[in-house]
Length: 324
Figure 1 (cartoon, rainbow, N blue to C red):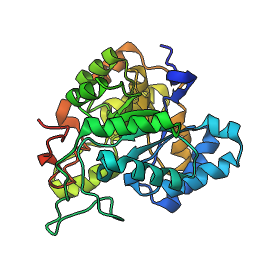
Figure 2 (figure 1 turned 180 degrees about the vertical axis):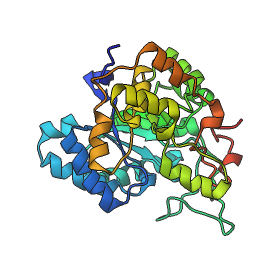
Figure 3 (figure 1 turned 135 degrees about the vertical axis):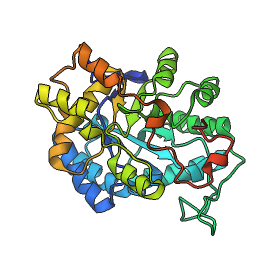
């Protein structure tokens, strides 16, 4: 089957369906990885204020742009409003901090990172109480925040606005004001989000999948804390067998599966070889039987890795999106 390389957005803009993820990459490592990604051909770069590495991404991107407006237009740069900024009166401040660190005149896509909120503590994006729980702000006005984010678009400093980590009910509330350009959520072979993807398809909202390869680094950290077993997606027998049949890497199979399901992917790697491999997924195709075998691996909610329980106390917030 033919899989388009882009999502078509308004104003003729195109969102590349393979992007480069930057979560959990230290600034010095990230800068070199972005250089390699640009060389490999990536043009969609996903970041967030909460990752605390926007400045490194900005340095690498601006080095490549070199002041050339045409080269800037080739890029699709994404960043996100952090939980500490989820108040209407805080949106402007946090957005401008991101834009300043990225060193860009405009951002291609600005997302609300999560629907819940932390207290605003200057200089601390993840404020904690003495007992280790998060300093939560329970007064969140999600629709009010969305309206302020929309103003950034009207100002011309943002081309498109969207959301991340929202459930169907939250998405419907925001759509009553204006439809987001996309929804970014965790999607991978063990957590296929079939109901949510069906709902967004009806609404005409593209899905961008984070952790499409399972986020092994996060899974290892969570396993050490919780004792829960998180399977390595790259070692699943079904994935390995299909990869062997196509002479491809397991990662390429996992990404191709999602692309054929109609979603975009933002895999993260800092290894130049894997960076190139993760982009090289357009010249092979999974057949119907292979797609069915991979679809059968879905564990539903039990397959979720990034449940935000590492933010102790966040689950008590009325806008926490993953209540079972």
